[in-house]
Image 1 (cartoon, rainbow, N blue to C red):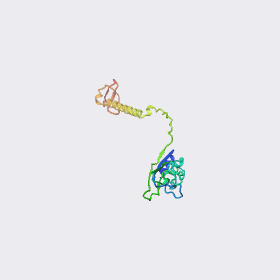
Image 2: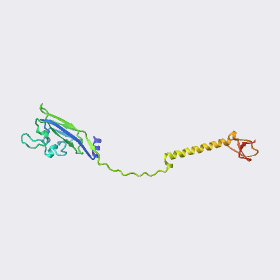
Image 3: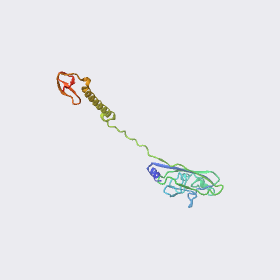
Image 4: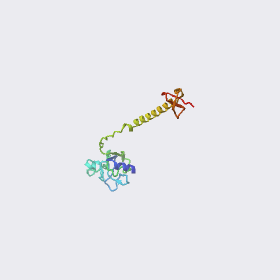
Length: 208
């Protein structure tokens, strides 16, 4: 219930439909001992019906004065079902007070006789957010190409290619098939036994 209450509180509006179909079954919301009531999320008894939020003892028709009349006094009732006659009647509407929703329990009476019938329908709790707010466009700051994933990948590949070329050159300079005899040597390569020829660009075998 704590989570539901949090959702209701954060919503712009909430509503829950409550409907009672009756024949010879009164609600009696305005009586000191009503036949029917509902219980809110805090466990409190509520004696108003859907469409009459906060108006104790009334149904939706009691708000606009369109309820059925009392058969004895002809006075307009506060709920249709309070006519308590042989006609099928309906009292319904939405509960909209966020501070008490949702409905957690429904209690009914005046259905003990064979001619007394009543059917209740409780709709789901519906909550809605407020009007959508237009979010201003965000201008992205350009990222230098070298800082992108593609840029970094290209740089790494270039470094690997450069290292490969250095290794290949070193191998070629020291490989036996590259050597030829020289008449004079100016120095030797430390990585192998190839030496630099002073009389040309070729590499030859050092004389010991």
